[in-house]
Length: 324
Image (cartoon, rainbow, N blue to C red; front, side, top):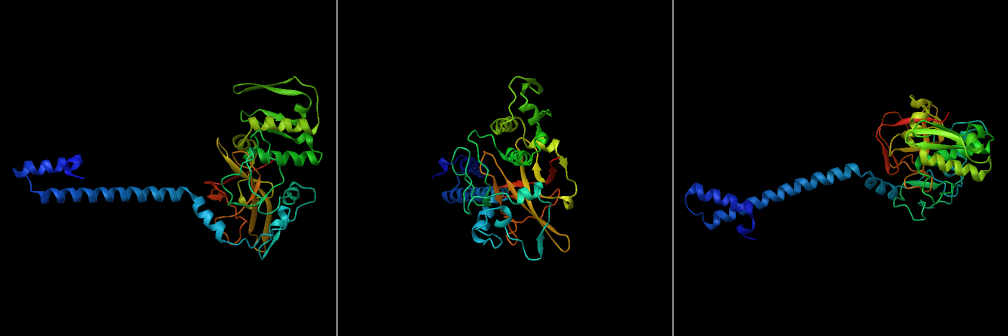
């Protein structure tokens, strides 16, 4: 590389020529060239360090992959086929008791696929991130791609109400704010949507079948999400009041949501929780590890308005909601 190949070097050399009123010797030219070369190297190094630091800050999964691979899950029972039997209780804690038949008991006894089952996308492919879960819930993933993060939890809640003969309680707001109930849908009423204006008309025959129930859920998946749930559901302002069935939520488009599915407490009243989540793209609903504190993973300490990383998503200011 010559000075002629470097316009910046030529410019400085020209300045030296004018100032000294004679052509600088080759040693001065070489010195100027190497000074410039070293300056460029320093600039590139500084930029590289800045970019690397930013990537490390933003890419928490890098740390989480290492944690997930080197820490033995001492609280995991690989033979367990429910949430309750898959995860052991840390010493000094015990599970919080809930009434038989409650939503809480329904969740903590939810069935799991065999240990080491992978997260599968709606199209049958494997999800790229397989390091943040310790169980896959026995929830089918429809091939239409609609059952994403909020939708998966809507399904779990709706199936609980269905199975417990509380079908009239099944209903959710669209993002527009309009309420759509299973009762009206089963009676044949369908929404007519024009922008943010929604009206309901009887355009179908009454059908209370389970097959029609899942068609109703597909409608809800299409027009509801984390944003509608955030505005519709009961906010939990005091984290000490959290219980099984409550949800950690970031309402938005996109947003994210995870559901509390088990709860333990010690003699001092300190609580920890388990979480499961769906995701985008639509995929297997999975029970997540705690990759920030492997000493009691997969249990989480949950607080309001703090940063809570959950698998490969970070809730930057935690908020909680509860089904009515």
